[in-house]
Length: 219
Image (cartoon, rainbow, N blue to C red):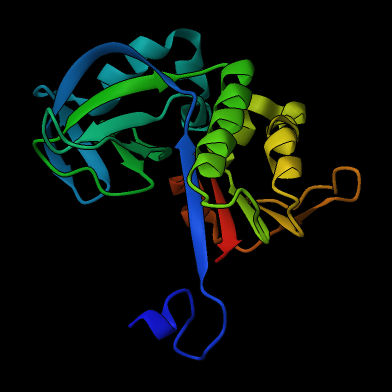
């Protein structure tokens, strides 16, 4: 009822989040159909050994698999008009010609390779912050939660902290009291303003291939 609008069941102020998610990854190569898979392990793409298809598009990077697979995740759709999920490569089985990903890829899925650059990832982080800011009613936030992943870190290397720096303008405009960045590995504070927490298990972090900004607003 009207008496309880904006308050939680415990009578505390309810937090209304604004959210934004932008990856910064580009597609390359043709779409493929997963013709055989088991949960997160893909055995065939268009009837051909999945690892052979994947390696063919990686060129010299194929020699560094599975590590180089972090740079080339798969975009996955259940059907043509369906939402896109991103799956990062975890391991390969050369004898079976299969690949294991951080997340399920059902048989019949549509998949396509992805790649990116550091600058595109930084731009994606900034766009995610803008989207989250636009989702707030009064433009102020008590908390900013930034979620990244090991795939982005593999591309950005020493520039990984620029993701947070790219969001600084939106965060400052929100008069945010606390900023927490979640990543696979803790990093140093940026100007003493950002607390970086190591709270995700390895495979959960691997499965997150977008940077999400969640801005909690007090109503």
